[in-house]
Length: 387
Image 1 (cartoon, rainbow, N blue to C red):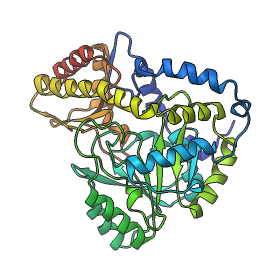
Image 2: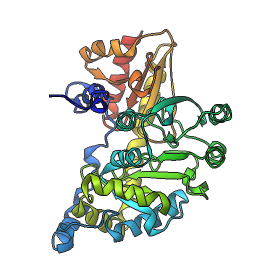
Image 3: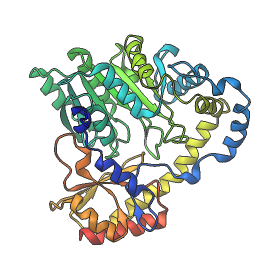
């Protein structure tokens, strides 16, 4: 059988490898980006599930844009938490954020179009966008986020950019947060050079310290930003519910991309999420997550400081789920992973997070999945390997 070139051009072996390491078991897994299942709000959900099971519309098809009541709840939530002012016709429910990325690619990207991505960046987004055969340009990160000055230099040299994909808050995999100055600069560049910013904010509500930052979308006055958010990290991932916010001009075609994918997202899950938010349970649940994850982040940072050799450095994120480690002696973390697994500890090698090249001596460490005791032991095993 002859397959399409676009499918043959996408390598998902790294993703399958990461998924195989998430379960952990005897192996201490820092590989996944998954919530702790013991925090799923089962008691609250039992009552809501019973209520929703008596609502006939919860079992029916719904609008491609999503259940109106849920979208209204989300609009209030986004305004309060992220400073985003949007109308009902500017928010759509998607089947996870990855579908949002896929819809954007379907609606906006032609073969050869230039997409600027952070280096490193979320590798599932790279795989998803790669289907549409763009030309990737990767832009390095610094402590304050994407190097927008380098982006400006590239643009002024005449490079025509279609999209800039960014995870500006507690970035995956680095944990870095873009400062407000860069957010405003990115908007200015988008307006001057006519490109779209895709703001993926999967982790922004998981803040353990520091001052909350407004979304890039907050500064968008000309409809240049498409904003992605998700319930997967702050509610439950199994419903596969997320949202996309865009100007009405963009949404008209983005909705076509949604309709041609699955008509509408899980209606029953949308009703459950609506009722969960309507009862003001989401804010309480996010606080519960923060109280549970912060000690884990602290434990990993303390273990890194205690056990790691001097040739290893790492980021110190104010929130999110990940710490990004760099080995300065040129070690190949992909090759080292086999030995790490033999020692019953796992991570994600850095190369998978680069669109072009990079990350050979880097690794992503997740701190939300394992217990504090296993985090300390896992970092100790990694430190012994890297020594």
